[in-house]
Amino acid sequence: MPVDRDDSIITPAEMSAIDRDAALSGIDSFRLMTSAGTAVSAAALRLYPQALRFVVLCGPGNNGGDGYIAAAALHASGAQVAVHALGDPAHLKGDAARACAGWGHAGEPLAKYRPRPGDIVIDALFGAGLSRAVPDEVAAVMRAVGSEQLPVIAVDLPSGVDGRTGQVLGESFHASHTVTFMARKPGHLLLPGRTLCGSLEVFDIGIPQRILAAHTSGLSENGPHLWAGQAHALDPSAHKFKRGHLAVFSGGPLATGAARLSAAAGLKAGAGLVTLASASAALDANAAHLTAVMLKEIGDAGALARWLADKRIGAFVLGPGFGDLETARQYALLLNDRALVLDADGITAFKDDPSLLFEAYAQGETHLVMTPHDGEFARLFPDIDADPTLSKVDRAIAAAKRSHAVIVYKGADTVIASPDGRAAINTNAPPWLATAGSGDTLAGIIGAHLAQGMPAFEAAAAGVWRHGRAGAKAGEGLTAEDLAAAIEPLPA
Ligand SMILES: NC(=O)C1=CN([C@@H]2O[C@H](COP(=O)(O)OP(=O)(O)OC[C@H]3O[C@@H](n4cnc5c(N)ncnc54)[C@H](OP(=O)(O)O)[C@@H]3O)[C@@H](O)[C@H]2O)[C@H](O)CC1
Ligand SMILES: [K+]
Image (cartoon, rainbow, N blue to C red):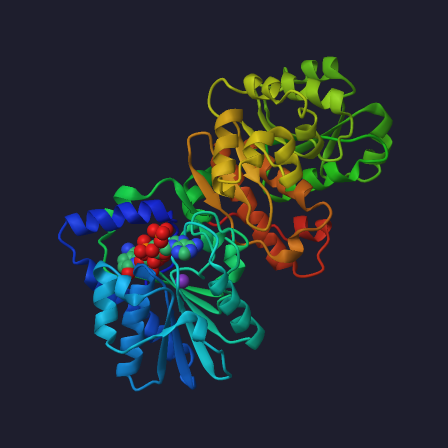
């Protein structure tokens, strides 16, 4: 049966362990394959009742096995079916060999497939077992199908997409629909995999939940289930001092807008009080634009140290438009026992000596959130960035562990990772959210959450999610000002 979109995400390696445990507990693996292949045939008939022909492309492993089951089920329903196999089907093993025998017809070699109008392609070439770039003959078929613009239904994953990383190994199909089994894999949500899956269906082939739960790590899709329990601090009816005091550092006189965007977003996101900390040269520019946000003159590290005696300031945002890297370094180090969102120039300030920052924030519960985009990430974590074997999730977790910070690794597939290994992939951001000032707004929302006492991982994940929602609500063509205005209350 189709399952509700569950939030947990399972890596292909975890899925193999789940399969092994399922077999050990007496579950018949061929029944799982039968269930998987039948679900694919049902999706094909449901989505393309007008198909002239279903062409099932079967690979050398169990993904191909699912394809043979689907081919047999489609044939039994009266549809016209052709099967093209990669490699010699006589070499298939185990369940895949049995599925191929059940299909019972001679297949054609893959290289002989000539796409024709009215074909619906069922891609059962590679799934979880893809281990290297697809062979040339597969890439040629992918290009031919793409140039005919034929609909493709992918079994488990579009062949060519790495289920662990979402990266394309060589070439891939661009599916219109993907049927996966039991749970989504990282490659269904990370880019570019996400865009290559088309619509995604998760089908329950009958592996018990207890076996799945025993092998799921801390990775899930970002959503309220991760942090709604921590959002009680954000009760808007609470007194303003109880709703937290957020401080945002302003840039110089010609670069004050970014910090004001953060401050406005922090206020709208629920901070009771927001203060903009500004050097004297930028005070007038800020004063001319502020109403609900307060203004405080902070010109150097000495002034900041004195201000920090006020323990009611619950969190700080440093970086948006800040400009002065030396001062940013001093401020970040002074703030090391406070909750801090370090963004933009605040991150770049530590590019020459990241360990200085990481060591300063190593003590106690995680209280630093960093929000790098690709370029900033590479500046702080060049070796992690350069490792081609790591997925975006792996990179974010490795960076979080090293830096003792929650990492919000931004992009259209933002990953939030905690030093304790938890991670979430965000999927609710519309493409137009990538606009000037968008990141400043995000930093302000996360800052508001920290100021109200949310733990760092939950504060960051909730911030990314609310930011995405605000982007969707503000709509295409939004500016960062619209974005802050569109921040909705946290879900109860
Ligand atoms: N519990 C479930 O979710 C179930 C899923 N099922 C389906 O099974 C596949 C995974 O099957 P598996 O056999 O592990 O892997 P694949 O079929 O994806 O591919 C493995 C074979 O492909 C060869 N391979 C891999 N990469 C390449 C490449 N670039 N070029 C050529 N050949 C490649 C690989 O050969 P090796 O030489 O690497 O060993 C294998 O022969 C899953 O995706 C689901 O569709 C079950 O049906 C039900 C349970
Ligand atoms: K596939």
